[in-house]
Image 1 (cartoon, helix red, strand yellow):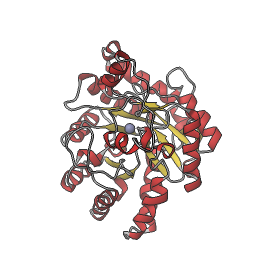
Image 2: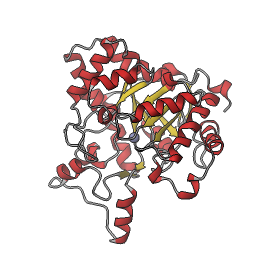
Image 3: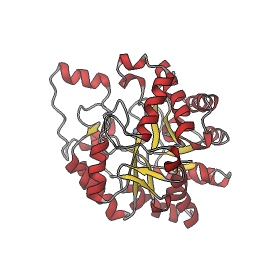
Image 4: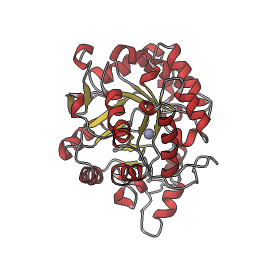
Length: 350
Ligand SMILES: [Zn+2]
């Protein structure tokens, strides 16, 4: 697929479509994935652990600690994913999902195509590389040019030895401090963006300065900051000032922990906002003229956040958050802008 063919279009796992076909869109999810941390994988191997069995008795605790239990951080079962997407469709008939599962966290592009065909939910596959600790040592020696070529080919000819093409670059994984491989992956994403016209999504390191460093790298590599989505604003910025400062760079702010209603953050002692607080941040961004720079999602990456295991599932934003936005005084136009218009312009190749 050359650039002329993609310009002005959206690329889903089942092919290229017109942007007007996109309905309300979840910009950052994982449908088939494995984000189990390398130390949990090696512990499981050493101790010969089986995946945890989730029950009514243990689901609250497993969900709260989120990343500790072997087996909670992955799903590759199509039957579970089909059920979850059907629930999404029942709540929002024309919903769209962006699956940012990329290299390092076991993407399954053909699986996504199968699920999309089976449920009618349009799915967009992300390209590129997750954080350094998930990347094999030999790959870390790649040059920026090699990484760029690979990302371009994922958009143009297919991802990871399949013919399923990516419709967005990301989530490009970053830790704090930024690792050398991650810097190269960011530079490659910016170069591939210039070749393909795709937008970029970045998972920043857990530090309030991380998003600004990333914006600098993307910019100095010639990337388009207006088509750069910064994920996980919820856990990266503890106050509005940082969000406003990031918005001033032109980049897109993604509040993608919707449905996580606990102040406890399993990685460090950051206080997480509730859905109410997320909406208050978004309200403030709209009032300061940054409404075009906000997108939302759940970033589901544990079983316990799926409906099948007692969680809120992919439908939560449409079923619960949109009505909450209406009650909190968001206009129809503002809601439409955040859940539909902003994603559409990001997913349309330029
Ligand atoms: Zn993610």
